[in-house]
Image 1 (tube, one colour):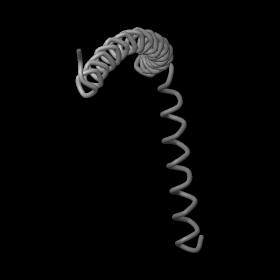
Image 2: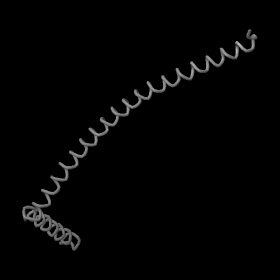
Image 3: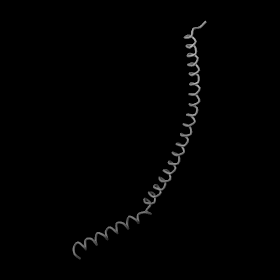
Image 4: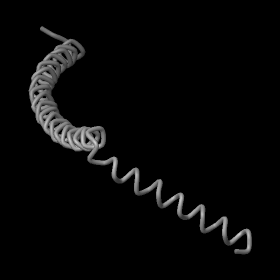
Amino acid sequence: MTTRGESRFSYLLTGLGLGAIGGILAAILARKETREAFRERRAKSLDYLKQQAGKLCETADVIVQQGKNLLAGNGSGLVDRSTEAEKQAYREEKRENLGG
């Protein structure tokens, strides 16, 4: 025959055991959901990075093409025109300062 204290102790142990099993099962299920959430987040991040890398490549291609045009002489006319304009502005400023 068990005493009243022993039966309470066995109930306590049974409750702790069931609680531990339930906690482990809940942790396993939550872990699966967490892994799925991380997978989705990772996929979105990779898509974003691929998109940004594509934009960067397009911009770099434009810059390279402009550099090639400048080196090939297509842009040399722009440089000549700007230096001529600077020379003309200098002459006009010199005339104004000298009172002419």
